[in-house]
Length: 413
Image 1 (tube, rainbow, N blue to C red):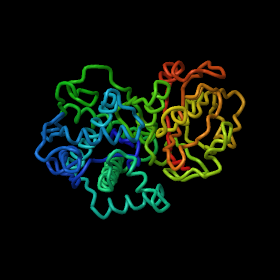
Image 2: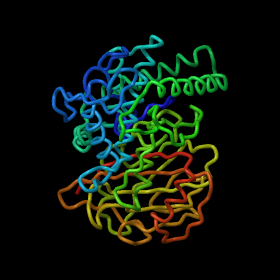
Image 3: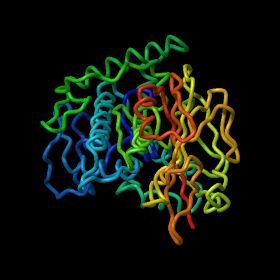
């Protein structure tokens, strides 16, 4: 996103996944104290009525523990995070809290400058997104069923937030174009973050980067033009297994993983299936060396020197789940992979079964698995050879990330 809103990898509407951002339940209001992502926390959020214990406060508006619990569950489900001792990783909770905080920032900023979104506009945006991302009957219902509690009302609220953000960007760049517009948007974004962070307080134990109390290093500034979709202004690193942790961070972290992406942002897609759609039977249970679905990418960051691709089964346990394929050494001159044929220089790491090959997507009979495809763009090449261990390489390529893109699909048997 152009500003700094944190979105969940889905969904939301990104993600809308889908994408890109909004509040949990209730009616979104652009008023400084009206019902909002941050304020309407308990309705349908898994908390008891009246439970308004605040974990953070943005300019007087509380973010309740129930709202945080709701969006933490959604974030965990959409990113494939595995619970440890019954609890999700703290990074997943921080991503959800960052989403709630920055959504509140957008609502209050919109009220400050007189920007608003009508109900008709929000419904139209949602209908457009649904038609594109969930084209087949039942696609949306299947997505929601695997989203950890997200609802169509949540998606509508995300749509409204996304439109508000777009309108705020237009407001900031009015009368400018090209480099002048980019510079104006960057100045606005910096002032926006500074202003609202100063008005955000967090309870002890919930302090993260968007809180006034945070004293640690902050993420580096980035131009609006280079923050592909900025689905998250907070970084997450939920891990479904130690070797897949960085992939899930990409899926739910900065400038990457929403299933709905901003035009011109780094993107990953397949000619074989729609986003959130069904993977054709010819790519399911086709044998250990069966062809993976074709993948295409575009709009890589300008300084990309190498890409790393992950294919992960987020649903199955044991040898049927985890990393199905990891490929490094992909150069920015490539635009995709067809029929599993890798370009010169590409190397294959170990999948979760311990083999340096494509592991094949094969759910249990009668089951459907959610498959995650993630592409990382790196600013420097990492010296790897065939059979590399993803967990070992992770510490290197995570330092070199420029951006990432993610898409999802469902494999059924």
